Length: 102
Image: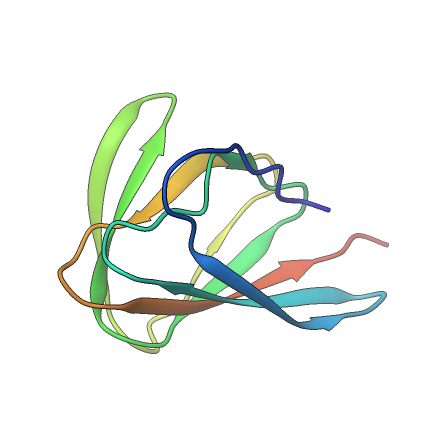
């Protein structure tokens, strides 16, 4: 599994929608303040926000607030390590598409 989640705090809800030889597609649902937990991505991935919102990203360089717009996708490489927290006042949801190698 590409997410190695740490413990503690309120955890966002992951729902795996597809997991086959090519991709793993997971919907993440966060209430305000909920987090994925610290993890490292073992595959390149794409995120598709389902609602407008703000994510607080915590990584080795510190913390930053990242505004998201529903439908405005972005991609990241394998190896990203971070914790992702709903930094907004309302619910946040996105779909993460992990691209399996080979």
